[in-house]
Length: 313
Image: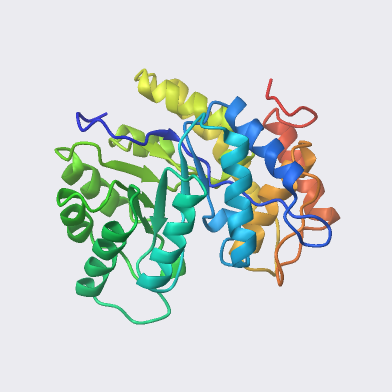
C-alpha cells in the first residue's frame, strides 16, 4: 500500500437491485442483501452502479434503492451513490438527490451519448465537484460510456482536489498501473479496481480496494482476499483469488444474451440460490436465467463451498 492514506479502501460491492416478480423494488430482499454484505466484512457499499441496473431504473426507483440501502446500512460503512447520467446538469441533479438521501460520496462517468473531448470531460467533473458537496469518484467504464478516461486527466483532477478517487473498470491493466504510480503522492485519493478475477494483482500494484460485482455473492471471500493482501500474505490472497476466479465462471453460463444480462443474471441467480434475495428477476428487456443456467450456477456455488448456507464455511 502507498502512503497516500486513501479515504475509501477495501471491498466496496456494487450492490445489486433485487426485484419482485412484478419488476418492482424488493425492499425485504435488498435489506437482507445489505445485512449479508455488512456481515461479510465489506468496507463500503456502492449503490446505483452498473450492477444495480441503474440504467434501467426510473428516477423514483433509483431514489428508493438508495433510500433503502442507506437505511439498512445505518451508518456502518460509507455509501457511495452512482449519479450515472448522460450530461453534466443531469449528474448534478442526481448528485444533489443522493446527498439528500444520505450518500457519503457520488460516482460519475464521463458524459455519454453525446460526443465529448477531454476538455469537456475535465470541465464536466469540475462542475460536478463544485455543485455537489460530496466526495466525487470518476467511473472509468469505456464498455458503457464509449470513451476512456486518460491517466493524465484523472491525475490532474485528483491533484486539483476535484476527484476523491476512481473506480477503474476499463480493463486497461497498464493504464491502471500508471494510475497507481501517479497517484502515490496524492493524499486521500482512492484507486479502486472494478476487476473480479485479478484483485490480488491490483492490490499488489497498490490499488486501495476493489468494487467487484461478484462480492455480492461472496463478500466473505473478497474480504479474506483483501485482508491477506494487507498482511502481505500473497499466497493466501492468490488462493482466495483463484477460488473466486473459478466462481466467476458463472457469468459465462448464459448464452444468446448480452454480457450485462449474463453477468447480472448470474449474480442474482446465485444470491437467490443462497437465500439472500427472493427472485432472479431482471429489469426489462433482460430475461432472468432459466433452469439449465440455474443448475450450472448451483454447481459452481457448491464447488466454492457456498451452496446451502448464507454464511460460507
